[in-house]
Amino acid sequence: MKKTIETQVLIIGGGATGTGLARDLSLRGIDVVLVEKGDLNDGASGANHGLLHSGARYVYSDVEAAMECRSEGMILKQICPQCIEETSGLFVAVPGDDEAYIADFPEMCRKAKIPCRKLDMDAALEKAPCLAPDAIAVYEVPDAAIDPFKLAIENMTQARGLGAQYISHSQVLGFKMDKSGIGLARIKDTRTRDEFSIRAQIYVSASGAWAGGVAAMAGIDIPMVFSKGSLLVTGQRLAKPVINRLRKASDGDILVPGGIVSIIGTTSVRVDCPDRIFPTVGEVDLIINQGRQMVPDLGVRRYIRAYCGVRPLVSSKDGDDRTVTRGFALLDHGEEGIHNFITITSGKLTTYRLMAEKTADLVCGKLKVSEPCKTGKLPLPMAETGDWTAPGASLRHGFRLPDRNDKMICECEMVPASAIDAIAADVCRHRGRPDLLSIGLRSRMGKGPCQGSTCSARALAHLYDTGEIRGRDGIRDLTRFLNERWKGEHSLLWGDSLAQSSLKEMIHCGLFCLEMEDE
Picture: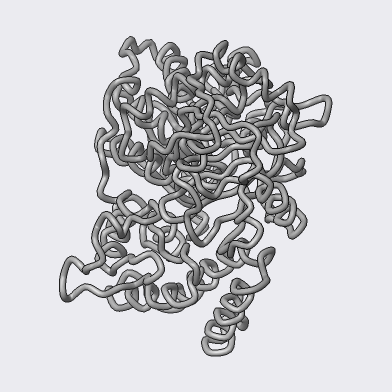
């Protein structure tokens, strides 16, 4: 007999919005189960540049989205400062950029109520010495950098502390419909292939780019388009502030600091499916060629990884995905006769809390719950399990191991075995056994210059030693982990990156014969 879980609200999707919604509803006293087909932030929430928008990027194309970003950015800086680095942001114009746009930029920011200050070149170069010396205009805005992984972990940790359940590696197969709407959801454990059901009073799809597919299971059509954005990670941090190109949103025009690295992006390429995407060599070349115009050093830097995510957007008739609103879409499917089904999609990482609040308000209205939202003022508690997600986390912990019996697993990012143990214990609390991918998601393991060449085997050996992994499972985990790393390397194979990738291949294929393993 298949197991059936009973709850008030089932949330589908474990990104920023889904975990933020779980926290919001749990704070209002509502019973919540969140299911995710992979693990936290597997979609766009974990594949962005980590920019906490001031809103200045959208002052020309979408003033409403710009103002939402400004307002929500201020709230997040108050409630979760542990996830945010107050970097400030520079908008930089170079010769050839649209002078009319440059001249109008301060007034557009003023109308959106976004602070904007003009800098002379001496002041700009003092803040960011890497800037192109021939820059013709520089403005400062209150951009910041945010750690999306720590954010999701801490939202879900508090929700779980209030009684919510998080079930990872669980994919919705379909819905059983009844007269009132959805009767229950059929779920498959993607690891064991076991199936179970969840019966809820309200079903919320916070599944991002997969929202259309989830809605289709209930017989609802949501017209969506998928815009792939690719980004590159440099080996070192190039500047303290965020650096934006002072022009209409385009390719390769944002450089975001992320601890000890920098992230440059992004592109906008229409794709048919969000499931199988990867950065291309052409996109890498485009990002570097555009980025070097405002930061010349980007033309000679070593890049350790490329990655991409999919923006879920409302259908665009003109085919230009950059003109589509970055506002969010909250859809009450009661209008289609399914009164217990809601979709929340699109939007920005910066506005995730607002998206969760508005969705929670709609859910509470359906459940006749009058509790107000608390997330706008209540601080997000720090969670120990999210302590190793940020680049440079080791700098906060110190380079010395906390215990002489401890050992270093990842030397690039200075992640010790004790951190692996803490993460593994947390994973076990909510979903079976840990694997290398779940540990890599919750830490910086494998994300440094060697991209898992040595730490992957060390971590696997440690998990075998502690009994967390047994039999052939570990070898399959190692293969999956390295394949995920490879997705971000194959478009960067030149110079030091090519040498490092070749070394990794020799270690894992030549020595461990992983190429003989079947997935």
